[in-house]
Image (cartoon, rainbow, N blue to C red):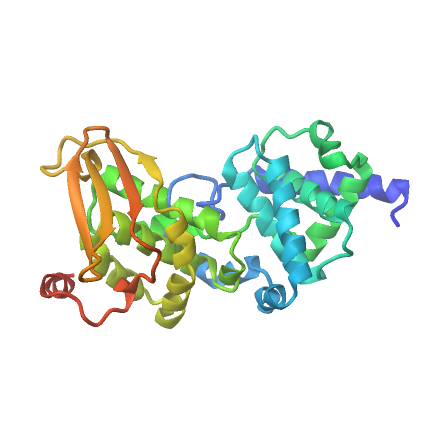
Length: 344
């Protein structure tokens, strides 16, 4: 147990260190810089150290084998989301990243409701400090029927910091989004924003899927973008897939496995709508069109119907049964798509 003087010292050190960390304007998309713009000279470093910001290798396996561990994680994530519901989703994502890394390092604690509540509070508090968000512990201390004093929360924060080796500027899939989007051939900003919006939505959903915890953040980002491209811009899919697969830092086999594991998550969000900025400079403005995909009962194929609705939104409607998307490794591409790939 910490004595009062030592706790005060730890609290002072904690606030000092986190103020130093967050003074660099921490942003999930650019964790190593103090700007929101992409710096390509930092990309190699991101690939090299991304594994330091992941749960341990056997974490996902343990969760799959132990129903209790899965249940604890779900309850802890639910607590994180309740506590941080009034903040930007990126804060919740960062808090869950801390949560998973802590649990994979320290193991699942005793099965008491107050434990995952306290852990969730501490993770959200640390994430809020990193994001420089206005966060008052007193506002949520009684949430869920449990009341914790500030000292108890600070003790948990110190335990989390130690387990994470003070690596609080987490490298997440969002850190690689801009880099991979730069490989997308269409340069029209609204198209890229639509692609990014859909990929980010998939990434947020994917954090709940224990099957994706074993993959590096870069692979999660690449897979989410490929799913988004396949949904929104299917004619660009092969070129985009080839460009990402040719990256020296991307393992093709692992990318295929991650893409396959993400399919259920991607399909769940296929009905989403995206508000985008329309562009009048392009002859065929995809953002002014309504995309719907339906599965042919006779041929088992997929038809894409395009109609103009003038809303400036992209809407993808799930008009087919859930099934494996075979476009990633399908050897029977049509002649038109094969020709496109040769031109990439």
